[in-house]
Image (cartoon, rainbow, N blue to C red; front, side, top):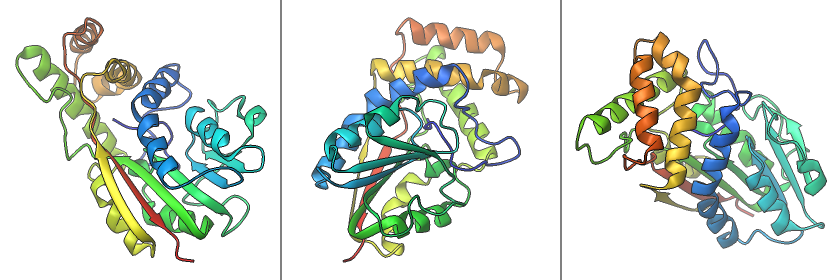
Length: 275
């Protein structure tokens, strides 16, 4: 599993899941259903509210920027950035400023020390210059501000079907292994999620904490899988990782609800810039 928007190209072909593909909208909707409750549980626990300033890194779809804007209100500000802003249309009318931006190469929007919250979900796993991206996000925090990073860890739980009971589940898991192969070939760190607490401590942040969320057998898991496989279908076939017939069979199994599908664990980690 991966989110929607690598903040820089990785490998010779760039980001595997192109925001400009029609399936991207379905992926964003499924990711929002799965993970927005997790993200906003943390946002609310960190005390993000009226009048605060937030930077959403790698915004992709609209759900997180809109949720932040609702919390900070007209007296606050939300900046949503991504290399590809194709799916952020309409945010400007809801109190969100949208910018095309590369977190590993560009200066923080508005300069250093401006934000009460900087948040990135399912972004850094795809960014090859991760350490530089984290440094720039930390610089963007005001003293006392929070950095909330959320990333998958596919190596921690690599299976699409954790209970492999028959040929349909074995096919599903083989296709998921092919997806991981394609991701790794483009510079994705499939073990990155588990490193987030250490990354935040080494960045000089205080009050570091983390947890994990691991959904299984949700309609959103099925919707995410179908959209993802359709996006990478041609690459799986071209790499010899699957045939068209196998992919058709897998998509049929997913549509019929015959599989208990999981996602990789989402690791959420947070830390505060010392005052």
